[in-house]
Amino acid sequence: MSDIIKIKEEYLNKLKDNLDLNAVNQLKSELFGKNGIISNEFKKMGSISVEERKKFASDLNTIKNELQILIEKKIQDIEINQINLKLQNEQVDITLPERSFNRGKIHPVSQVIDEISSIFSEVGFSVQEGPDVENEYNNFTALNTPENHPARDMHDTFYLDNKKEFLLRTHTSPVQVRTMLSGKPPFKIIAPGRTYRSDSDQTHAPMFHQVEGLHIDKNINMGHLKGCLNYFIKEFFEVDKIKMRFRPSHFPFTEPSAEVDIGYELKDGKIIIGEGDKWLEILGCGMVHPNVIKNVKIDSSKFQGYAFGMGIDRLAMLKYGINDLRAFFETDYRWLNHFGFDPLDVPSSYRGLSR
Image (tube, rainbow, N blue to C red; front, side, top):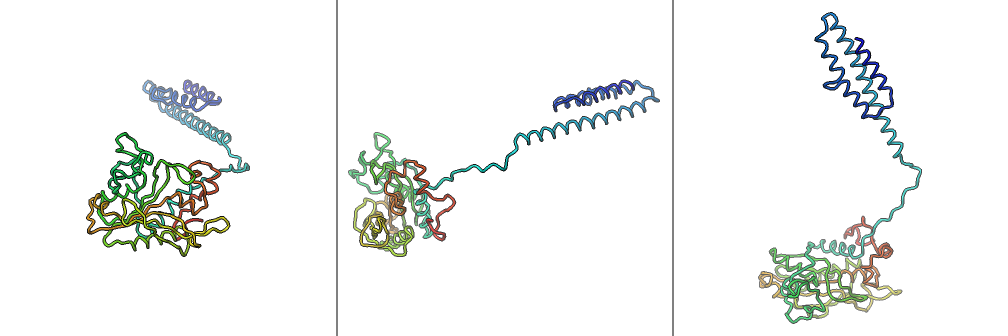
């Protein structure tokens, strides 16, 4: 009996010390482990007389329970102290002013792409995309571009190899070719994206953005094209009336071809779209050339269509009064903060395109 009393007093004294969690767990293991002190004391019961065994077992269980309770309380106190210390060190002073932050803005080009996509989606067009690196066939040959056409020259096109088999696309028309080769008519798509040409000044950049549209179906005619463009221009510039004229032109991939002008006037140095007697070229268009339709394995005797293309950067400049194309690519946060758009204000026809 004296042995277990000594054990109790020894470990009670140890538990009074300023111990950390590891030390308390070590004491717990010494007492109650498989080969611990308490376990070894229970093994002695076989050598004790029957009369003494009952009292020895009762006293040993009492001491065991007392030590277990004390150890568990010690562990709990240590954990609580650790939590309180952590809370004290990591407390937040709510009286401090909040940190200021700058919310980003949507670039005008991205905004205009969203506006264009929203407008055309209202009349059944879907958005298609393609790679910036194209092959010569999709960019030129499939689109009925002659071998001696100036657009194929190296001073106009960024070729990626000496054989001129791969290049940076000069328009997004290859997306139309890819779409038609991978499916069956009817097709009604727009293809916005980056394009590349060897040109750079105040109104031209070597990398710029275009959107091209394509509608292929039976019995499509020039009237459908005019109606589609009239709807788009009024919706995009958010005007009720628009003056629009089609001037005969030439593109290898359309026949007949036309360039579209819209009426405008200058008021206080600003361009007012839809009014006045001045004309501004805005896009090119036409009926898809039968050779293009044949090149994409479609029966040109059954299916016809129209196509159009316009510069997204130019549309952004006209609509939002930006006078230098190069500013689009200078990553000036002050400029973007002035001309940019709220990222949460997604353009749509029913809520308004630009606010």
